[in-house]
Length: 254
Image (cartoon, rainbow, N blue to C red; front, side, top):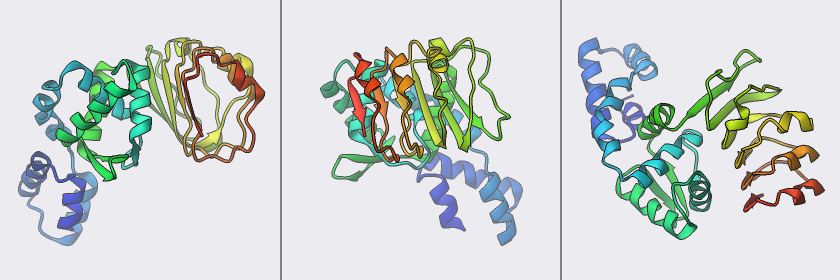
């Protein structure tokens, strides 16, 4: 149980000390109490301890760190994809510059190298911190789509992650035209109507990796500002001809 707790702390001394403090305060002794704490341990106060860690980053590295909130917890991060995303969101001017920020995040222990400097994993607690700071400073929101009960907030955002099950969904707000990036986690079916996609007139990043798509709608050509389209690990057998209308598209990841 102690090893599981250490893994949940991500090996971070500050997180380990915080859990130790909670163990003492709750006077945890038996196995059932350990299991309960493992589920309920609160890293909220630990994240506050990392505020100085975050603020010491230079502005460009800080933007790279904030964009880590786009990705799924415990996911494998590919160097190529990270650098491409950073260029689009403005954290780097060109791909060569963004590659140097990979080294910066490794040196700060934000990410660890998994495979020959091309794949990385992110520290669990620091991923939580990236989400918290992105919500505060990066005009970012996470939308959890659960049986159609959750909708985007009415306040404008530039970046959004949608977590959903494999059901059909449809949503739109008056602020979709301000979105720059849209990431989907989970699986589902996309709305194929041109009128729906026209609402995302400023969208530059659409990422549907591992989403279980069987086809890409012809109406994709309404996303005229799109620069990055992530379709890796889906079931798409044929791309629509309308994809050729996306004149600003720089990256097609399939």
